[in-house]
Image (cartoon, rainbow over all chains, first blue to last red; front, side):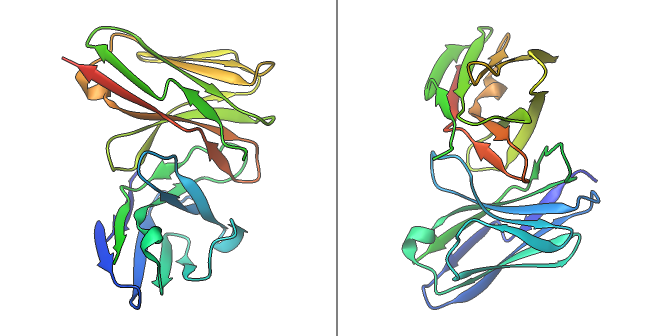
Length: 113
Length: 110
């Protein structure tokens, strides 16, 4: 299985809502990533988990809270978001180590009203 | 910003023609990767070239790397309508981070 899955595909939420994005991979990868991508821009790294531990937080606001329950799952908990947080949220995974080829999921299109 | 620059920003060609896109970056790297993204979807890894390699081929793709100039190019030969997508270079300087370039939007018309 060489696939990274993400749910939901689309999400609309109000600024007072709490929601979660989910990501799953079964490739035995030990590194997992969250990216944010605005239209016509490159992906921007948000968080990196390595061996289920948070290793990189790119100064992301606390209204985004990542969680890695096990080596196959990655969640992104959302709370009190702003309209400017509307974007495509991409999950990726990689073997880790020196060669960092990343496998991406299809993304969750988030709209904050 | 450490973000790489790509040019052109957009490229429009006919089927059968070759497409070349260029990437420049700012820091020393372990490797450089190219990804494709169809509209609004996830990225797909195309090819990886290590810092000690100068050229690499994969099917219709040819990638070059010039570490002295901190630049790379991606050539797609005999393009097809299905190649229509955005293409991003990404530099890997270690520390588990990829830094993506600004991207080239390629349109291949039948």
